[in-house]
Length: 415
Image 1: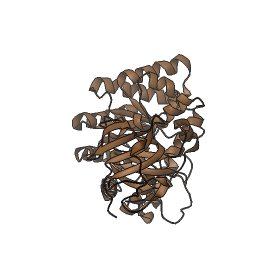
Image 2 (image 1 turned 90 degrees about the horizontal axis):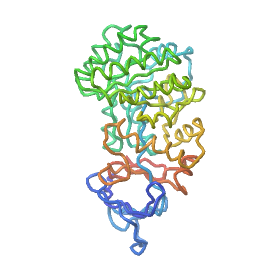
Image 3 (image 1 turned 180 degrees about the vertical axis):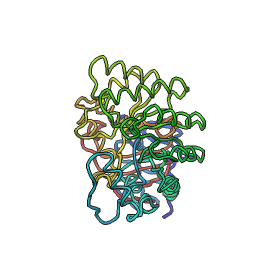
Image 4 (image 1 turned 60 degrees about the vertical axis):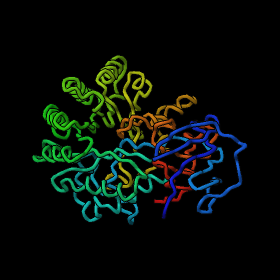
C-alpha cells in the first residue's frame, strides 16, 4: 500500500515530557515545538482510519493523541538470517553447549531454507511491528554458505523500503582459524561493504586467541571496518581475551570500532579486578552488547556507562535452530534487562529505555538516534504514563514511524 510521508507528528510526549509536535522532512526531525491545543481538530487520517485513537488533519499530519513517544528501538545484537519465524514449529534437537548448537544448525538450516529472504523478511517485519527501526545483525559467513547470507539480509532489508535500517556483522559462527578459508571470507565481506566483522570465543572455539584476534584486527585495519566479537568465555579466561582486544584496539587506532558481545566475564569479576577492566575498556573506546540472558551474572551497567563503555541491547537469535525462544520485541526485552539489573528507581528504568534506543545510535552507524532535531524520524508511540511505566509494562505499540513514514499501526505492519 502507498504510505504518505509524515510531515508533522502532533501532540506526543517525547520521553514523557511536555506535549509537543515533531516536524519532519525527508525522513529527518526538523523541529520539536510545544503542542498548541487550540489547533486541535476532529479531522481524520488521510486513509480514513482512526486506529489507536490517532487522527490526521491533512495528508502527512498525524495526531498522536498525547501518547508517550520514544525513539525507534535499536536491536544492537541480532541474527536475523537464522530465524524460522513464520514457518511451522521446529522442535529443538541440538546437543548442549555452543559447539552442539553450531553442529545442529549446520545440519538442519538448509532444509528450512536458512538463510532465505522470506524468513528474514518475516522476522524483520515482526521486529518493525513491535517498534524496532534499526538493527545490527550478525550474519553467518562460513565455508558452507559463503557470503550468501549477507546478500539475503540486504535483500530483505531493501524489501521493507526503509522501514528498518541495518548494519551487518560478517559473523564466523563456526570458528575462524579452525576453518581454513574463513578469514578470507571475512576479508571479502569487509571489502564488499559489511560494516563489521565478527569473532567467536577466540580461546574456547579456535584455541588460539592471539591468532584469531590478530587476523580480525588485520582485516579491520585494512578495510576500516568494525569488529564485534561474541565472547561467552567467563571469568579470567574471558577477561584475558578482553585485555587482548584492548591492547590491539589501542595499537591499531580502532578506538570506538570494537565491540564485545555478551562478555559474561565482565559481570563475573569482582571488586577492583572488574573496575580496572571496565576502566581499561572505556579508555580504549570498546563497547558492549548484551541480550539480558536469564541466569548470567548481570553486567555492571552503571559502572560501564560511567567509564564511557557504551552498552547496547539485542535480542540475539529469534526462534531459530539454537532456541525456540525470542519474539523480536525489544521493549519486552528492555523489561527483562531492567529486572535482571535490579532496576527499580525511575532514573534507572529510563536508563534501560535509553540503552534500547537513543544511546544505541553508535551500534547502527548513526550520530544521533533520538527525538531531537537532526535525528532520523524514527518514533514509537505507546499508551503509558511515563517512561518507567512503558519499561515495566511494555505496552502495545500504537504507532511506529521509521524514516518519516508510518510503518506499523496498532499491531499491523504496513510495509
